[in-house]
Length: 266
Image (tube, rainbow, N blue to C red; front, side):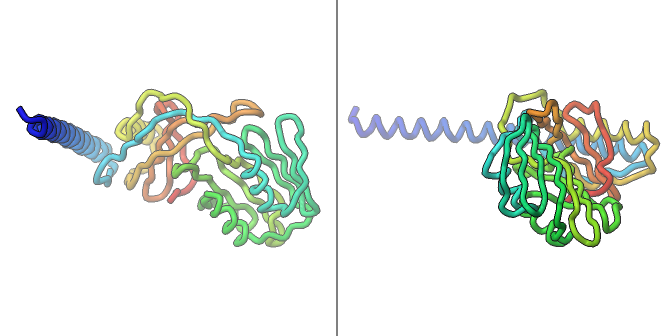
């Protein structure tokens, strides 16, 4: 048999193998989506029988359920301090870095927690929200009046529960702040899968046990939950955020902790 004929046959065989693999993958994907839709319908019936409503069209997936640790970046952390202090001197002190200028001082710990005190308040609320939005922070609609604003940080496209920043204003200008700033993440190991369906089931049980008024669940999306284990290190675990018509709730990575976030997260 001619060499070119052997090559031709080999190419045809490889093409057929690839088509067969694609068909199997497509069939597996269809079966998975069918199973997810069936699970969603069962959850909707369960919610309805409990006097609540689940309005989702599909169940989201959390592609990678892994833990993570805070990754430090001297450049990013200095830029964060500069948002409030301008050009600042920096001094290392044990588990933290101390940034200071004529405008104020910030202590930024290794576990990503920070405390800020302004000596010469000059930043308005509008300016603060704009500058922090560029760093991934979103304001929470809590009722702190004009003197207090709460924000939550989003890292790698996921809101970080427990990373809340509190801004205090006096005379219309920022006087102090505290919370967490995460410069980056270092991925850790995988953990056991806890799906959106698992989180919705756990939330329904929680709502019934807490006797929460009948509500409508509008959305669920993946998040992370921060835990400051020591002054030197913080870890993050996968979590889910469940959105109702009036509030947001989080469900941790195994359903053992569920709580209100006191406002909706967009």
